[in-house]
Length: 501
Image 1 (cartoon, rainbow, N blue to C red):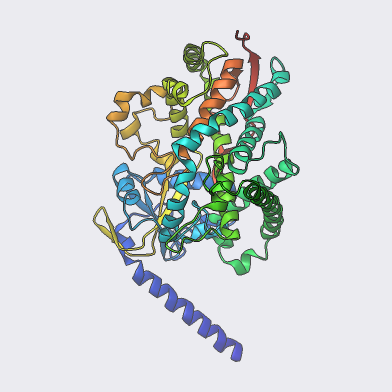
Image 2: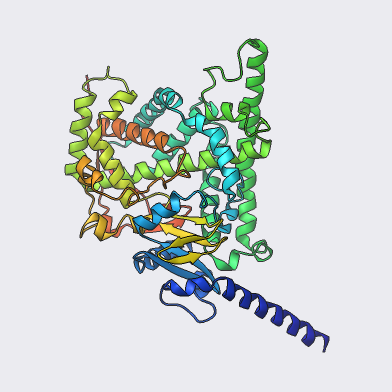
């Protein structure tokens, strides 16, 4: 009898909470739902127990149904979807739209610039960290990046004229070493534990990607019972231990430098790398430094975002060039005209002369945006297309879908065409139709860093090798692991180009 009473009470509480959610979210009745939808449960059955490929495909198909605004229902709770440049501009330029939804808690990197949910706290951190990616610092990174890419070119030499290789494996190692050099000041060719670290970061991204859109993993009490949780804790231990060791080593080095040169202030021009600045920077009205936890979160965020996104963006661009030899040849002609001899250095000026190469990079990021699914949370009421959306509501957008609107990109948006980013075409296009690094004030802090690294890698690889592949763009399939990852190898063949004088 007692059990039945208890069961009745639980059922009543659930019913009351469900009714409360329906009342709060009544605004969503005016927003069309993605089909198919299950009564009461909404889209929960479609988001239970799915893998990362199924997650990606579900959201592609869902956004294909949305012209301006739609919704996915998690039971009575809506996930509002926007897919139009006008609405994107309203959201990303709205000062009350800096918050991020609860899904970002699953990263468990609370104060990182990407994962910090609280918009006000994010603004404080972003203001403090803006200086770490200023023009002077980025200019100083160029020779460091170029040195790493030249090493990559040498490592690829034994594969030229041989069989197929998975280009991503080599690019990922290079971009990781770039990050180590520019953010942490580690100049060794390979740090102890680097390979293990990279493997566990990749696995961690997979586990986070699975959890974010698997409703059955939302509640901690159930998630902690899964094998995924146990694997995740192992990954986190490896990643944190590796990163903490680097932070501690660098902290000791900085202290030693201060003792040897006490007359230099803490912002001496030598301190250009990201970690040095995070360790010494002051923030907020209290003029306090970042805590150890904040330093770790910021460093892991920068490393994860910088390494993973750059590696995939470059690998995708090179794959598309291998699929389109005529465009590859045009890029090589431009590179040869700017870097006419080995004495021409990589500088801001010479990189900016690679106009067509930059168009190629932008078109690659349009077709294959590395971070495709992003979200915000309303902190105040916002009106979109006449619908008043109250505070604390999820708004999601899918750059993979946004970048394929036929009304923006023409009748064949899947075609790889760098001319879409010629000066006239860009001028005539809505500024929020293309958002590979998001947009508004909460855009990617490292977008210029990313473009520089991509240009240098393309420059040096294409100077030295011709790329071919038997992959076809129409056959590429992807999975969502925070970033958008190709299923299968990034398969290419390399042929050595004639040596330059």
